[in-house]
Amino acid sequence: MSDQLIGATREFLELSVSDYLQRSSISGRHEIEIKRIDPRLRLPTCDNDLTVTLESPSEPVGRVTMRVRCDSTARWTVFVPGEVHLYRDVVIAQRPLKRRAVLSSADIALAERDIGSLNQGYLTSLNQALGKKLTRTLRPDQVLTPATIELAEAVRRGDQVTITASSGGIQVRMPGEALSDGAVGRQISVRNVRSSRVVKARVTGPGQVEVNM
Image (cartoon, rainbow, N blue to C red; front, side, top):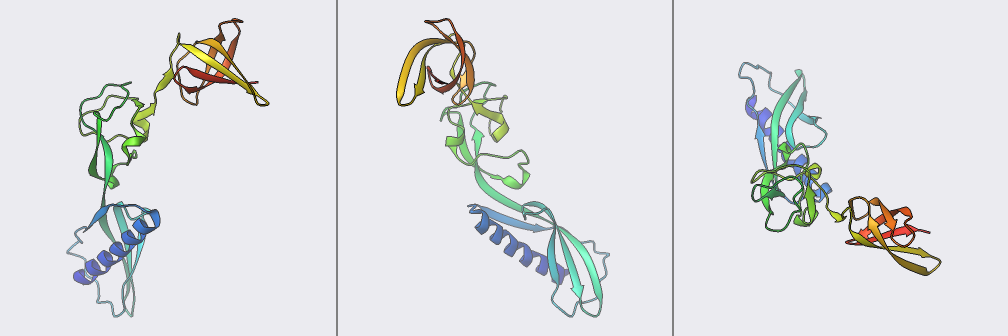
């Protein structure tokens, strides 16, 4: 009976993982491991095909539990543990990196990792990290997660910036001074050098901010 159980669960997992990868457009290789079944388990032979469903989690990645049911004359249900190792290229640190470091191509690389164990998430493209700032110190070979990076400041406090204001096709530019740091897309306080008025402006690039009129 043990061979029948293992064969059915492995076939089910192979089909489930293949379907999941196709639906998710994920490119990667996978390995399937069926955990050892208690040798003391004595189940009658099932006259029909076994019915296998995924009990947990919702997607066939990492540690999984399958419900195996026999609906023949001898009815029984058993839970079989397994593990799906799904390997993808993810972004890792190439060397020790300090907090607040702005990432360059010399700092990061792609390496294959089992994403089933990456509970904090991961990045699959170098472009997702290049030019970003680290929120924490990283060790060599450590996987970067979405929480470990943030946009680097395009403007720093004290920088001289150009304030752009647009309305009805008319565009006005004036000199300003940044009163706080800001990444592209963030709002910061800026002092208009000519009027000394402090306004809220959105950072559009290095040394460039925009205000609404």
